[in-house]
Image 1 (tube, rainbow, N blue to C red):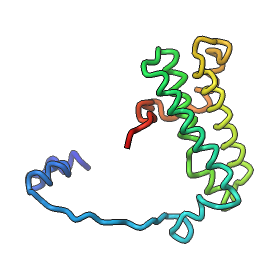
Image 2 (image 1 turned 120 degrees about the horizontal axis):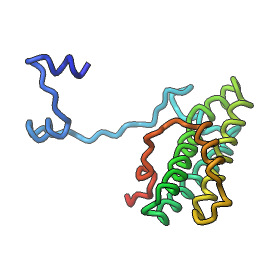
Image 3 (image 1 turned 60 degrees about the vertical axis):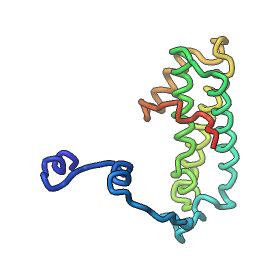
Image 4 (image 1 turned 45 degrees about the horizontal axis):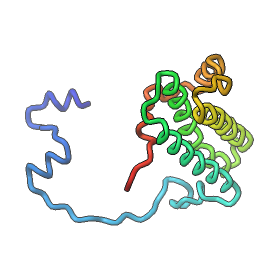
Length: 166
């Protein structure tokens, strides 16, 4: 689509920041209300007492991973490989499919198992990251096995997971 647009002489593609600076446009600030594509247009699918137990696991995992990254600013190739797989497991743990499937009860047991499997692998990798020098924490074979199970997000950038000062 972009290539076709670029072929048009009467259409110029520019970034939003370029547009604003070029045309000196003023925009008013808007406040958007909470909404969701989920049932009722609110967050009941994700914030539900029946499966609210998942959020403390996710929140603690995020904090733990941020802390590990803070203490390992320049990881070696081996350390980076472990940290990248830890990031993949965290992304999979955070997936909205798990609370959705728990809420709808379409595949409740499957969602429960997948959530716990991702969390267990995350914890295993995190434990290895807490002491990279102890090669008994995770072997190359174990890491390769986890990587073969959850091989999505090959280009994951661990810098995106670092703690931000906002």
